[in-house]
Image 1 (tube, rainbow, N blue to C red):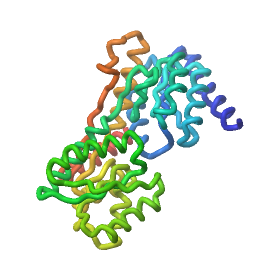
Image 2 (tube, rainbow, N blue to C red):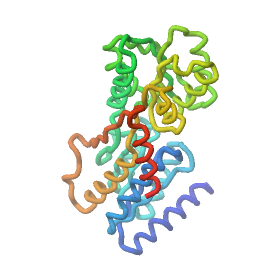
Image 3 (cartoon, helix red, strand yellow):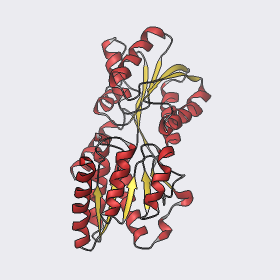
Image 4 (cartoon, rainbow, N blue to C red):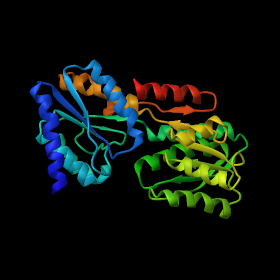
Length: 313
């Protein structure tokens, strides 16, 4: 109750200030606090400089909990938000709750979709395509085929399932077998233990794939401590500093990154146009895909420089 009151008060204060200035408020609500979102916030701030007639805000739920995320959105709507963009924590179970929000204000999704809910459209990555990108990295690094072990938080999550599907579609066609995928339920210690256990129980494995951002660093730690760096090909996801360092020194074959900066920059401009009455900005099938990128030893320095520039501008 105390938490809900604090959120309500903060929402009223933030949205109310914008209303006083007669600006429509668009609020981005991610799935929880994470360094991953720093780039998205930076993209939103860039868009704000180009959108003087709207107020763009970024509001984190107290923790990654669907009920808390929903209460935050309800408080924002009550405080006068004109539109909300949300990264759903559990799209399948949140559809009804999202419909209540979508019935009051335009609701957009990003990062993870909720296609069954009353959202206007989704902007973000195609996780199947990201998986295919990872497959391309594997094919280039392993021309003679391989046996790979995958590591991820939860194979039941849509983004994990789709990345695995995409990886298999490309790599499997070139004799690169994903033997199994070990889950860790987002437990960092377990993520590391899964790699250690694989090294002992599966000596035939000569390729590892870290499907979530924290998996590649745990793979790196285990291979380093077991003196296996460079002996097992690693394909990564996202831009953790350890991951980028491993790509730079050749310990990893490459990493597939998303573009949260562009999600928020382009998304903010599209949302503002929609609020102004321009419905032509709604993409075909309600999905706007911002492609991922493959980062290799050849372009990692340029990528890191661009990353830093976006975070500091």
